Length: 313
Image (cartoon, rainbow, N blue to C red; front, side, top):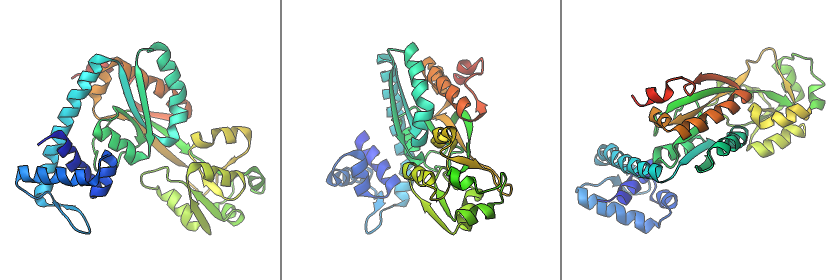
């Protein structure tokens, strides 16, 4: 039994696909199949049912937490070795927050930590939680609370709330009263531009899409272009349209019968022991500075005077 076999087993269990597991692990499907045959021979049990659909057997479900425990122990050992060799920080972030939260924070951090390697990766929420689970990153910036069942326990170092304003092109907003009813807005602009800022859409966003005559769900870039062109009512996290709001290219509207939307995000680690490393705590604090500019800090465990000591207990 070797670590590659266990990693392959864990990957298949998460993707329920030998093909996807091979792509994620950057190996051939034949290699994945061979590793599973050898592992099943060593254990003397069948871990998966094969067919049109892949599923864990009862034996596979029983063995999975033990396999993950072994993988985590090996990864923790490797991380400990890396730390003594050279200063290094790895972070995974939601795509929409890389520029607003990390650009200036990274400049300030590297000015005072010039010998520290910093690696930043981006993705959707489940990509970042997967990076944390695999320990390919030690810090994550994700939507909060975390609802990913594969990584249920994450330690929030900081939680921030960002508003999600409804916006229109100025020539459309000019046709509305200062505090319109939502029905008046949708009569003027029947299309809603919907973006998935949340793991689960809040009721307000869902209800808005339901009331609209038409809706479109597309990535942020083209969604912003539609809103700028007056082709719909959009709800964007403030950081995604800050420049357009400041320039007057988009206008925030506040229907008096619609509760404002928001998104909570968190800077997280797998455990509070991350605060034991000064460089990690310093980098997270720089990110916290940008969070305070962007939204409202709901919780901050970085500024506790005994944060490092508390983390080591």
